[in-house]
Image (tube, rainbow, N blue to C red; front, side):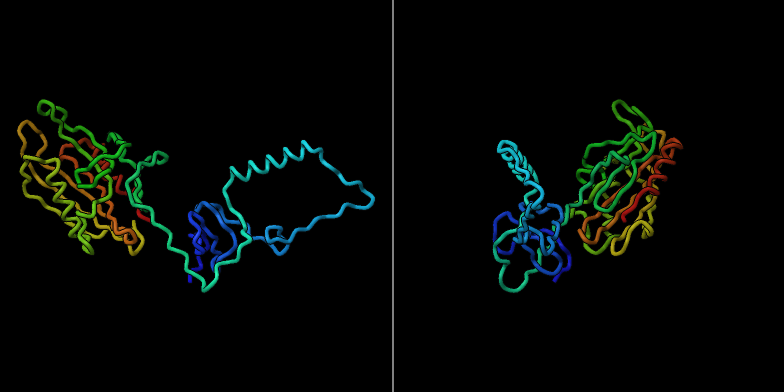
Length: 292
């Protein structure tokens, strides 16, 4: 039996009705809202249990009577409060018969990438990070990322603007949740390899990457077991007409969230001649990444 109190589907079969489980047994508290506040547990003389006590007026003090109009107004206000408030009540029906029933498990919220404007930063499940600093330009709307993550968030900076007509060579970052099709079950390193393949293809269309050198290693200190994190770092060369840049620096982290089975990815990619501010911002942002 669970010892976790909460509102759960009423085992007596009422539609759209929730009954309060106190951690040991079902109570008489009912609600139409599974997110209703914790009910006050009635004491032995609580009127909600059916024991009604009426104080008799003192013999030496006259009873105070309200005019009829005021009494009606008070009743109307009380009724309005009941109708507008959360519907939680004690029923007079019998408690469900038979053996106690385990409350159903709480539903897990889906892990999706979100923009948190209070930080500002990005969040997905327990994974959080701050936005890369200036001169990166960061979006607050979701888009498909080069890493293969749909509905992620991107920051970028034009290192060589219009190096050819209508084309700029960018430094960019991306934060998002990988689709299940990119995840290799129980093999975080193989999942990182798929991300690397995506990043080496998307954004470098028609460009031959020369002498790529990458290493993958577990990233400790940012997750709590059984969650895991792995970081991949490396460089690669290229030769593009009219482009001063000759190589790129790519780093990314993939975090596996055990409970949901989801994988969160964050990457940075910048050319060898990027401004010092871009290099500094790209490295510093990894220090803000946490999954606890």
